[in-house]
Image (cartoon, rainbow, N blue to C red; front, side, top):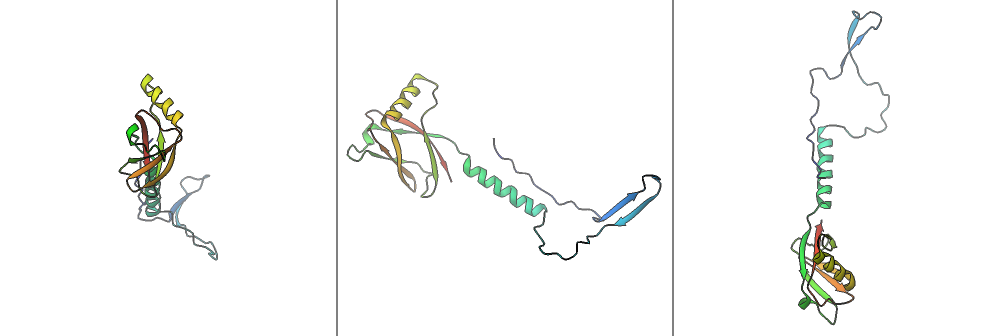
Length: 156
């Protein structure tokens, strides 16, 4: 589910501290009064709860959510690209940064070919080996002899 921000607005009135007091026993007996704080010594003022503070919170939640939500992109691990002596492969992924986090997983098990691909991924025992700007490096305990497909979500 996508986070949808709300634009908060401060309540604006002509008399923000004015209240009307009505006598319950005699509803015609009403008085208009100004209500003011009488809190004594303020030891800590606290944070204002207003539109600016709430909109800032909305923005931070939106940004955090955006960093967690991502789109899975499919990549092919070509059998010919594996280094058979180091068991490593370098995969170009444009959105990867030095500090980004990636989720790497197999294909949806929606077809026999995808299930076979995922079984081969499991047999290869592919693990994260590192990353650089624009790429990730993977290690395979058992270097695959066929091309395999993975899906990757890059998170900030």
